[in-house]
Length: 504
Image (cartoon, rainbow, N blue to C red; front, side, top):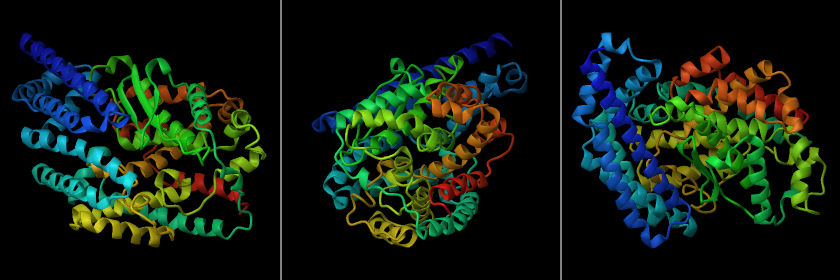
Protein backbone atom coordinates (compact mmCIF):
# COMPACT_ATOMS: atom_id res chain seq x y z
CA UNK A 1 0.00 0.00 0.00
CA UNK A 2 1.47 3.35 -1.03
CA UNK A 3 1.81 6.45 1.14
CA UNK A 4 -1.20 7.94 -0.69
CA UNK A 5 -3.29 4.86 0.08
CA UNK A 6 -2.22 4.84 3.74
CA UNK A 7 -3.20 8.49 3.96
CA UNK A 8 -6.61 7.77 2.44
CA UNK A 9 -7.20 4.93 4.91
CA UNK A 10 -6.16 7.06 7.88
CA UNK A 11 -8.33 10.02 6.82
CA UNK A 12 -11.26 7.67 6.13
CA UNK A 13 -11.09 5.95 9.55
CA UNK A 14 -10.66 9.28 11.37
CA UNK A 15 -13.76 10.66 9.63
CA UNK A 16 -15.76 7.53 10.46
CA UNK A 17 -14.72 7.88 14.11
CA UNK A 18 -15.84 11.52 14.07
CA UNK A 19 -19.21 10.56 12.56
CA UNK A 20 -19.60 7.95 15.29
CA UNK A 21 -18.84 10.62 17.90
CA UNK A 22 -21.65 12.77 16.51
CA UNK A 23 -23.97 9.75 16.66
CA UNK A 24 -23.15 9.17 20.32
CA UNK A 25 -23.73 12.82 21.25
CA UNK A 26 -27.04 12.84 19.40
CA UNK A 27 -28.02 9.58 21.08
CA UNK A 28 -27.62 11.20 24.50
CA UNK A 29 -29.74 14.18 23.42
CA UNK A 30 -32.50 11.90 22.08
CA UNK A 31 -32.43 9.77 25.23
CA UNK A 32 -32.78 12.88 27.41
CA UNK A 33 -35.61 14.19 25.23
CA UNK A 34 -37.59 10.96 25.65
CA UNK A 35 -36.92 10.41 29.38
CA UNK A 36 -37.96 13.62 31.07
CA UNK A 37 -36.52 16.72 29.43
CA UNK A 38 -38.73 19.74 30.28
CA UNK A 39 -41.41 20.23 27.63
CA UNK A 40 -40.71 23.94 27.30
CA UNK A 41 -37.22 23.10 26.12
CA UNK A 42 -38.26 20.57 23.49
CA UNK A 43 -38.41 22.97 20.52
CA UNK A 44 -34.96 24.36 21.30
CA UNK A 45 -33.60 20.85 21.83
CA UNK A 46 -35.03 19.82 18.47
CA UNK A 47 -33.17 22.71 16.81
CA UNK A 48 -29.93 21.65 18.52
CA UNK A 49 -30.43 18.06 17.38
CA UNK A 50 -31.12 19.35 13.87
CA UNK A 51 -27.96 21.47 13.81
CA UNK A 52 -25.70 18.65 15.02
CA UNK A 53 -27.38 16.16 12.69
CA UNK A 54 -26.84 18.56 9.82
CA UNK A 55 -23.12 18.82 10.59
CA UNK A 56 -22.85 15.03 10.83
CA UNK A 57 -24.71 14.64 7.54
CA UNK A 58 -22.38 17.06 5.76
CA UNK A 59 -19.41 15.11 7.08
CA UNK A 60 -20.89 11.79 5.92
CA UNK A 61 -21.60 13.15 2.41
CA UNK A 62 -18.45 15.23 1.90
CA UNK A 63 -16.59 15.04 -1.45
CA UNK A 64 -13.45 14.09 0.47
CA UNK A 65 -15.13 11.01 1.93
CA UNK A 66 -16.23 10.01 -1.56
CA UNK A 67 -12.66 10.38 -2.84
CA UNK A 68 -11.22 8.27 0.00
CA UNK A 69 -13.81 5.57 -0.67
CA UNK A 70 -12.91 5.50 -4.38
CA UNK A 71 -9.22 5.12 -3.49
CA UNK A 72 -9.87 2.33 -0.99
CA UNK A 73 -12.15 0.51 -3.44
CA UNK A 74 -9.34 0.08 -5.98
CA UNK A 75 -8.83 -3.69 -6.22
CA UNK A 76 -5.13 -3.54 -5.39
CA UNK A 77 -5.88 -1.47 -2.26
CA UNK A 78 -9.10 -3.18 -1.16
CA UNK A 79 -7.47 -6.63 -1.18
CA UNK A 80 -4.87 -5.39 1.29
CA UNK A 81 -7.42 -4.17 3.84
CA UNK A 82 -8.44 -6.15 6.91
CA UNK A 83 -11.87 -7.81 7.04
CA UNK A 84 -13.16 -5.00 9.27
CA UNK A 85 -11.78 -2.29 6.97
CA UNK A 86 -13.28 -3.96 3.89
CA UNK A 87 -16.70 -4.24 5.49
CA UNK A 88 -16.49 -0.63 6.70
CA UNK A 89 -15.71 0.57 3.17
CA UNK A 90 -18.60 -1.47 1.72
CA UNK A 91 -21.13 -0.23 4.29
CA UNK A 92 -19.95 3.37 4.08
CA UNK A 93 -20.22 3.31 0.29
CA UNK A 94 -23.82 2.13 0.49
CA UNK A 95 -24.75 4.86 2.96
CA UNK A 96 -22.73 7.50 1.11
CA UNK A 97 -24.38 6.82 -2.25
CA UNK A 98 -27.81 7.00 -0.63
CA UNK A 99 -27.19 10.05 1.57
CA UNK A 100 -25.33 12.16 -1.00
CA UNK A 101 -28.57 12.39 -2.98
CA UNK A 102 -30.22 14.34 -0.12
CA UNK A 103 -29.49 18.10 0.09
CA UNK A 104 -28.02 18.86 3.56
CA UNK A 105 -30.55 21.65 4.21
CA UNK A 106 -33.45 19.27 3.47
CA UNK A 107 -31.99 16.65 5.80
CA UNK A 108 -31.54 19.13 8.65
CA UNK A 109 -35.11 20.40 8.23
CA UNK A 110 -36.34 16.81 8.40
CA UNK A 111 -34.40 15.99 11.57
CA UNK A 112 -35.86 19.05 13.33
CA UNK A 113 -39.35 18.10 12.15
CA UNK A 114 -38.98 14.47 13.27
CA UNK A 115 -37.82 15.52 16.74
CA UNK A 116 -40.71 17.97 17.10
CA UNK A 117 -43.12 15.36 15.73
CA UNK A 118 -42.08 12.77 18.32
CA UNK A 119 -42.63 15.30 21.11
CA UNK A 120 -46.03 16.24 19.67
CA UNK A 121 -46.91 12.54 19.43
CA UNK A 122 -46.26 12.12 23.17
CA UNK A 123 -48.70 14.93 23.93
CA UNK A 124 -51.26 13.66 21.41
CA UNK A 125 -51.17 10.12 22.75
CA UNK A 126 -51.67 11.38 26.29
CA UNK A 127 -54.63 13.56 25.32
CA UNK A 128 -56.12 11.41 22.53
CA UNK A 129 -55.58 14.25 20.05
CA UNK A 130 -54.86 12.79 16.62
CA UNK A 131 -56.06 16.00 14.97
CA UNK A 132 -53.29 17.93 16.73
CA UNK A 133 -50.67 15.40 15.65
CA UNK A 134 -51.90 14.95 12.07
CA UNK A 135 -50.18 18.03 10.55
CA UNK A 136 -46.81 16.79 11.83
CA UNK A 137 -47.40 13.29 10.44
CA UNK A 138 -48.44 14.78 7.09
CA UNK A 139 -45.11 16.61 6.89
CA UNK A 140 -43.11 13.52 7.93
CA UNK A 141 -44.81 11.50 5.18
CA UNK A 142 -44.19 14.29 2.65
CA UNK A 143 -40.47 14.46 3.50
CA UNK A 144 -40.20 10.66 3.31
CA UNK A 145 -41.76 10.72 -0.16
CA UNK A 146 -39.25 13.39 -1.18
CA UNK A 147 -36.41 11.17 0.00
CA UNK A 148 -37.76 8.20 -1.96
CA UNK A 149 -37.86 10.37 -5.10
CA UNK A 150 -34.26 11.45 -4.54
CA UNK A 151 -33.00 7.95 -3.74
CA UNK A 152 -34.91 6.41 -6.62
CA UNK A 153 -37.71 3.94 -5.98
CA UNK A 154 -36.89 0.23 -6.11
CA UNK A 155 -39.48 -2.32 -7.32
CA UNK A 156 -42.01 -0.34 -5.27
CA UNK A 157 -41.61 2.90 -3.31
CA UNK A 158 -42.03 0.99 -0.05
CA UNK A 159 -39.20 -1.40 -1.00
CA UNK A 160 -36.88 1.61 -0.76
CA UNK A 161 -37.83 2.08 2.89
CA UNK A 162 -37.69 -1.62 3.80
CA UNK A 163 -34.10 -1.83 2.62
CA UNK A 164 -32.99 0.68 5.27
CA UNK A 165 -33.99 -1.63 8.11
CA UNK A 166 -33.59 -5.09 6.57
CA UNK A 167 -31.14 -4.94 3.64
CA UNK A 168 -32.42 -6.85 0.63
CA UNK A 169 -35.97 -7.30 1.97
CA UNK A 170 -38.78 -6.62 -0.52
CA UNK A 171 -42.55 -6.28 -0.61
CA UNK A 172 -42.73 -9.38 -2.80
CA UNK A 173 -40.85 -11.45 -0.21
CA UNK A 174 -42.82 -10.06 2.74
CA UNK A 175 -46.13 -10.63 0.98
CA UNK A 176 -45.10 -14.27 0.54
CA UNK A 177 -43.84 -14.70 4.11
CA UNK A 178 -46.70 -12.86 5.79
CA UNK A 179 -49.25 -14.64 3.59
CA UNK A 180 -47.86 -17.99 4.69
CA UNK A 181 -47.85 -16.97 8.34
CA UNK A 182 -51.40 -15.71 8.21
CA UNK A 183 -52.68 -18.87 6.52
CA UNK A 184 -51.20 -21.09 9.26
CA UNK A 185 -51.67 -18.89 12.34
CA UNK A 186 -55.32 -17.94 11.80
CA UNK A 187 -56.53 -21.59 12.01
CA UNK A 188 -54.34 -22.11 15.09
CA UNK A 189 -55.88 -19.02 16.71
CA UNK A 190 -59.36 -20.34 15.86
CA UNK A 191 -58.57 -23.71 17.46
CA UNK A 192 -57.28 -21.94 20.56
CA UNK A 193 -60.43 -19.81 20.80
CA UNK A 194 -62.54 -22.96 20.66
CA UNK A 195 -60.57 -24.83 23.31
CA UNK A 196 -62.41 -25.54 26.60
CA UNK A 197 -59.07 -25.19 28.42
CA UNK A 198 -58.87 -21.40 28.63
CA UNK A 199 -56.30 -20.10 31.16
CA UNK A 200 -57.47 -18.05 34.13
CA UNK A 201 -56.16 -14.47 34.11
CA UNK A 202 -58.28 -12.97 36.91
CA UNK A 203 -55.31 -12.92 39.32
CA UNK A 204 -53.49 -10.52 36.97
CA UNK A 205 -56.16 -7.82 37.37
CA UNK A 206 -54.88 -6.19 40.56
CA UNK A 207 -52.90 -3.13 41.54
CA UNK A 208 -49.18 -3.86 41.61
CA UNK A 209 -46.72 -1.54 43.32
CA UNK A 210 -44.56 0.30 40.79
CA UNK A 211 -41.42 0.27 42.95
CA UNK A 212 -41.68 -3.50 43.36
CA UNK A 213 -42.13 -3.92 39.60
CA UNK A 214 -38.97 -1.89 39.03
CA UNK A 215 -37.06 -3.92 41.61
CA UNK A 216 -37.96 -7.19 39.87
CA UNK A 217 -37.15 -5.77 36.43
CA UNK A 218 -33.69 -4.75 37.64
CA UNK A 219 -33.18 -8.19 39.15
CA UNK A 220 -34.06 -10.00 35.91
CA UNK A 221 -31.78 -7.74 33.88
CA UNK A 222 -28.90 -8.72 36.16
CA UNK A 223 -29.80 -12.39 35.71
CA UNK A 224 -29.67 -11.95 31.92
CA UNK A 225 -26.16 -10.55 32.14
CA UNK A 226 -27.01 -6.91 31.41
CA UNK A 227 -24.17 -4.77 32.76
CA UNK A 228 -25.29 -1.79 34.84
CA UNK A 229 -21.73 -0.51 34.64
CA UNK A 230 -22.47 -0.07 30.93
CA UNK A 231 -26.13 0.95 31.09
CA UNK A 232 -29.16 2.03 33.08
CA UNK A 233 -32.93 1.52 33.25
CA UNK A 234 -35.27 4.52 32.99
CA UNK A 235 -38.96 5.18 32.32
CA UNK A 236 -40.52 6.48 29.10
CA UNK A 237 -43.88 6.63 27.32
CA UNK A 238 -42.72 3.93 24.89
CA UNK A 239 -39.95 1.48 25.87
CA UNK A 240 -36.74 1.75 23.85
CA UNK A 241 -33.03 0.97 23.89
CA UNK A 242 -30.22 3.39 22.98
CA UNK A 243 -26.81 1.96 22.17
CA UNK A 244 -24.31 4.80 22.43
CA UNK A 245 -21.32 2.43 22.62
CA UNK A 246 -20.76 -1.02 24.16
CA UNK A 247 -19.88 0.83 27.34
CA UNK A 248 -23.13 2.83 27.43
CA UNK A 249 -26.33 1.08 26.39
CA UNK A 250 -29.43 2.53 28.06
CA UNK A 251 -32.93 1.07 28.15
CA UNK A 252 -36.35 2.28 29.25
CA UNK A 253 -39.62 0.64 30.18
CA UNK A 254 -43.19 1.66 31.04
CA UNK A 255 -44.87 0.66 34.32
CA UNK A 256 -48.60 -0.11 34.49
CA UNK A 257 -50.03 -0.42 38.00
CA UNK A 258 -52.73 -2.87 36.88
CA UNK A 259 -50.36 -5.24 35.05
CA UNK A 260 -47.57 -7.05 36.88
CA UNK A 261 -45.76 -8.26 33.76
CA UNK A 262 -46.08 -5.45 31.19
CA UNK A 263 -43.03 -3.56 32.41
CA UNK A 264 -41.15 -6.80 33.02
CA UNK A 265 -41.59 -8.13 29.49
CA UNK A 266 -40.87 -4.66 28.10
CA UNK A 267 -37.67 -4.57 30.15
CA UNK A 268 -36.60 -8.05 29.04
CA UNK A 269 -37.32 -7.07 25.42
CA UNK A 270 -35.18 -3.95 25.57
CA UNK A 271 -32.62 -5.87 27.61
CA UNK A 272 -32.27 -8.26 24.66
CA UNK A 273 -31.45 -5.31 22.41
CA UNK A 274 -28.97 -4.07 25.01
CA UNK A 275 -27.14 -7.39 25.37
CA UNK A 276 -26.48 -7.27 21.62
CA UNK A 277 -25.01 -3.75 21.81
CA UNK A 278 -23.04 -4.30 25.03
CA UNK A 279 -21.22 -7.33 23.65
CA UNK A 280 -19.99 -6.15 20.26
CA UNK A 281 -16.27 -6.86 19.80
CA UNK A 282 -13.85 -4.16 20.92
CA UNK A 283 -12.29 -3.90 17.44
CA UNK A 284 -15.52 -2.36 16.07
CA UNK A 285 -15.77 0.42 18.68
CA UNK A 286 -15.51 3.83 17.06
CA UNK A 287 -16.77 2.56 13.70
CA UNK A 288 -20.23 2.53 12.16
CA UNK A 289 -20.08 -1.28 12.30
CA UNK A 290 -20.51 -1.07 16.08
CA UNK A 291 -24.25 -1.78 15.98
CA UNK A 292 -26.65 -4.56 15.02
CA UNK A 293 -26.50 -5.80 11.45
CA UNK A 294 -30.21 -5.15 10.79
CA UNK A 295 -33.35 -4.34 12.72
CA UNK A 296 -34.71 -7.84 12.02
CA UNK A 297 -31.65 -9.45 13.63
CA UNK A 298 -31.79 -6.89 16.45
CA UNK A 299 -35.45 -7.70 17.07
CA UNK A 300 -34.62 -11.40 17.04
CA UNK A 301 -32.63 -10.83 20.21
CA UNK A 302 -35.26 -8.78 22.00
CA UNK A 303 -38.00 -11.23 21.00
CA UNK A 304 -35.84 -14.24 21.89
CA UNK A 305 -35.23 -13.00 25.42
CA UNK A 306 -38.76 -11.70 25.93
CA UNK A 307 -40.69 -14.66 24.51
CA UNK A 308 -38.61 -17.78 24.00
CA UNK A 309 -36.93 -17.32 27.40
CA UNK A 310 -39.10 -14.89 29.41
CA UNK A 311 -42.47 -16.47 28.61
CA UNK A 312 -41.29 -20.07 28.93
CA UNK A 313 -42.35 -22.54 31.60
CA UNK A 314 -38.74 -23.27 32.75
CA UNK A 315 -38.16 -19.53 33.25
CA UNK A 316 -41.14 -19.20 35.58
CA UNK A 317 -40.34 -22.48 37.35
CA UNK A 318 -37.22 -20.63 38.49
CA UNK A 319 -38.41 -17.04 38.92
CA UNK A 320 -42.08 -17.14 39.93
CA UNK A 321 -41.17 -17.51 43.61
CA UNK A 322 -38.94 -14.45 43.31
CA UNK A 323 -41.87 -12.49 41.83
CA UNK A 324 -44.23 -13.64 44.58
CA UNK A 325 -41.83 -12.35 47.24
CA UNK A 326 -42.13 -8.84 45.84
CA UNK A 327 -45.95 -8.92 45.85
CA UNK A 328 -46.89 -10.83 49.03
CA UNK A 329 -50.46 -12.09 49.06
CA UNK A 330 -51.20 -10.97 45.49
CA UNK A 331 -50.04 -13.91 43.38
CA UNK A 332 -51.64 -16.82 45.21
CA UNK A 333 -51.62 -19.18 42.20
CA UNK A 334 -49.45 -22.06 41.03
CA UNK A 335 -46.53 -21.50 38.69
CA UNK A 336 -48.46 -23.39 36.00
CA UNK A 337 -51.46 -21.08 36.38
CA UNK A 338 -49.17 -18.07 36.17
CA UNK A 339 -47.36 -19.42 33.10
CA UNK A 340 -50.60 -20.19 31.28
CA UNK A 341 -52.16 -16.87 32.34
CA UNK A 342 -49.25 -14.98 30.82
CA UNK A 343 -49.49 -16.89 27.54
CA UNK A 344 -53.14 -16.31 26.76
CA UNK A 345 -53.96 -15.95 23.07
CA UNK A 346 -56.56 -13.23 22.78
CA UNK A 347 -57.14 -10.47 20.22
CA UNK A 348 -56.08 -7.17 21.74
CA UNK A 349 -55.73 -3.51 20.84
CA UNK A 350 -52.15 -2.81 21.91
CA UNK A 351 -49.23 -4.28 19.96
CA UNK A 352 -46.68 -4.29 22.79
CA UNK A 353 -49.17 -6.09 25.06
CA UNK A 354 -50.12 -8.70 22.44
CA UNK A 355 -49.52 -12.43 22.81
CA UNK A 356 -46.88 -14.12 20.65
CA UNK A 357 -49.35 -15.49 18.11
CA UNK A 358 -51.58 -12.49 17.41
CA UNK A 359 -48.59 -10.11 17.66
CA UNK A 360 -47.74 -10.96 14.07
CA UNK A 361 -51.20 -9.82 12.96
CA UNK A 362 -50.54 -6.42 14.59
CA UNK A 363 -47.38 -6.19 12.46
CA UNK A 364 -49.15 -7.25 9.26
CA UNK A 365 -51.73 -4.47 9.83
CA UNK A 366 -48.98 -1.84 10.09
CA UNK A 367 -47.14 -3.31 7.12
CA UNK A 368 -50.25 -3.13 4.96
CA UNK A 369 -50.94 0.45 6.06
CA UNK A 370 -47.39 1.54 5.24
CA UNK A 371 -47.75 -0.02 1.79
CA UNK A 372 -50.97 1.96 1.35
CA UNK A 373 -49.24 5.20 2.35
CA UNK A 374 -46.25 4.92 0.04
CA UNK A 375 -47.46 2.68 -2.78
CA UNK A 376 -51.11 3.77 -2.95
CA UNK A 377 -50.97 7.36 -1.66
CA UNK A 378 -53.04 7.00 1.53
CA UNK A 379 -53.12 10.28 3.49
CA UNK A 380 -52.52 10.94 7.17
CA UNK A 381 -56.18 11.88 7.49
CA UNK A 382 -57.13 8.37 6.27
CA UNK A 383 -55.10 6.48 8.85
CA UNK A 384 -57.41 6.36 11.93
CA UNK A 385 -60.26 4.86 9.90
CA UNK A 386 -57.95 2.48 8.03
CA UNK A 387 -56.44 1.39 11.34
CA UNK A 388 -59.83 0.71 12.92
CA UNK A 389 -61.10 -1.19 9.87
CA UNK A 390 -58.04 -3.44 9.75
CA UNK A 391 -58.20 -4.18 13.48
CA UNK A 392 -61.82 -5.21 13.03
CA UNK A 393 -60.92 -7.38 10.02
CA UNK A 394 -57.79 -9.08 11.41
CA UNK A 395 -58.39 -9.19 15.15
CA UNK A 396 -62.13 -8.63 15.58
CA UNK A 397 -61.62 -5.61 17.86
CA UNK A 398 -62.17 -1.89 17.32
CA UNK A 399 -60.20 0.76 19.23
CA UNK A 400 -62.46 2.99 21.34
CA UNK A 401 -60.11 5.94 20.78
CA UNK A 402 -56.98 6.91 18.83
CA UNK A 403 -54.71 6.61 21.88
CA UNK A 404 -55.39 2.86 21.83
CA UNK A 405 -55.45 2.89 18.04
CA UNK A 406 -53.37 4.77 15.51
CA UNK A 407 -51.50 6.81 18.16
CA UNK A 408 -50.19 3.85 20.15
CA UNK A 409 -46.75 3.57 18.46
CA UNK A 410 -43.98 6.17 18.28
CA UNK A 411 -42.46 4.91 15.02
CA UNK A 412 -44.35 6.95 12.41
CA UNK A 413 -43.88 10.20 14.32
CA UNK A 414 -40.11 9.90 13.80
CA UNK A 415 -40.37 8.71 10.21
CA UNK A 416 -39.47 5.05 10.89
CA UNK A 417 -41.56 3.72 8.00
CA UNK A 418 -40.44 0.23 7.02
CA UNK A 419 -39.37 -0.68 10.57
CA UNK A 420 -42.46 -2.61 11.71
CA UNK A 421 -41.86 -5.74 9.57
CA UNK A 422 -38.57 -6.13 11.48
CA UNK A 423 -40.56 -7.28 14.54
CA UNK A 424 -42.10 -10.28 12.78
CA UNK A 425 -38.84 -10.99 10.99
CA UNK A 426 -37.27 -10.91 14.44
CA UNK A 427 -39.77 -13.52 15.64
CA UNK A 428 -38.81 -15.74 12.69
CA UNK A 429 -35.07 -15.31 13.22
CA UNK A 430 -35.51 -15.92 16.96
CA UNK A 431 -37.38 -19.20 16.43
CA UNK A 432 -34.74 -20.43 13.99
CA UNK A 433 -31.85 -19.40 16.25
CA UNK A 434 -33.58 -21.02 19.25
CA UNK A 435 -34.00 -24.27 17.32
CA UNK A 436 -30.25 -24.30 16.64
CA UNK A 437 -29.35 -23.37 20.23
CA UNK A 438 -31.48 -26.17 21.69
CA UNK A 439 -29.50 -28.66 19.61
CA UNK A 440 -26.04 -27.14 20.09
CA UNK A 441 -26.08 -25.86 23.68
CA UNK A 442 -26.31 -28.95 25.84
CA UNK A 443 -28.62 -28.40 28.80
CA UNK A 444 -30.15 -25.24 27.31
CA UNK A 445 -33.50 -25.50 29.14
CA UNK A 446 -31.79 -26.79 32.30
CA UNK A 447 -29.80 -23.56 32.34
CA UNK A 448 -33.03 -21.55 32.14
CA UNK A 449 -34.75 -23.59 34.87
CA UNK A 450 -31.80 -23.22 37.22
CA UNK A 451 -31.52 -19.45 36.60
CA UNK A 452 -28.13 -19.78 34.92
CA UNK A 453 -28.74 -17.56 31.90
CA UNK A 454 -25.12 -16.55 31.28
CA UNK A 455 -24.21 -19.58 29.09
CA UNK A 456 -27.07 -18.55 26.80
CA UNK A 457 -25.78 -14.99 26.64
CA UNK A 458 -22.27 -16.30 25.93
CA UNK A 459 -23.51 -18.56 23.09
CA UNK A 460 -25.28 -15.60 21.49
CA UNK A 461 -22.24 -13.37 21.98
CA UNK A 462 -19.94 -15.79 20.19
CA UNK A 463 -22.33 -16.36 17.26
CA UNK A 464 -24.16 -13.03 16.91
CA UNK A 465 -23.40 -10.15 19.27
CA UNK A 466 -19.66 -9.75 18.83
CA UNK A 467 -19.90 -9.37 15.05
CA UNK A 468 -21.96 -6.18 15.16
CA UNK A 469 -22.51 -5.17 11.55
CA UNK A 470 -19.51 -7.12 10.29
CA UNK A 471 -21.80 -9.69 8.66
CA UNK A 472 -24.97 -9.09 6.66
CA UNK A 473 -28.28 -10.48 8.03
CA UNK A 474 -28.31 -13.31 5.48
CA UNK A 475 -24.66 -14.16 6.16
CA UNK A 476 -25.28 -14.15 9.91
CA UNK A 477 -28.37 -16.39 9.94
CA UNK A 478 -26.61 -18.79 7.55
CA UNK A 479 -23.54 -18.82 9.81
CA UNK A 480 -25.55 -19.36 13.01
CA UNK A 481 -28.13 -21.90 11.81
CA UNK A 482 -26.60 -23.36 8.66
CA UNK A 483 -29.43 -22.24 6.38
CA UNK A 484 -31.34 -19.14 5.18
CA UNK A 485 -34.32 -17.72 7.05
CA UNK A 486 -37.15 -20.27 7.23
CA UNK A 487 -40.45 -18.90 8.64
CA UNK A 488 -41.68 -22.43 9.33
CA UNK A 489 -39.58 -22.49 12.51
CA UNK A 490 -41.85 -19.79 13.97
CA UNK A 491 -45.01 -21.69 13.03
CA UNK A 492 -43.64 -24.88 14.60
CA UNK A 493 -42.58 -23.05 17.78
CA UNK A 494 -45.99 -21.37 18.22
CA UNK A 495 -47.92 -24.55 17.38
CA UNK A 496 -46.01 -26.68 19.89
CA UNK A 497 -46.26 -24.05 22.61
CA UNK A 498 -49.97 -23.34 22.33
CA UNK A 499 -51.02 -26.94 21.75
CA UNK A 500 -49.54 -27.63 25.17
CA UNK A 501 -51.06 -24.59 26.88
CA UNK A 502 -54.53 -25.07 25.41
CA UNK A 503 -54.41 -28.90 25.37
CA UNK A 504 -55.24 -29.04 21.65
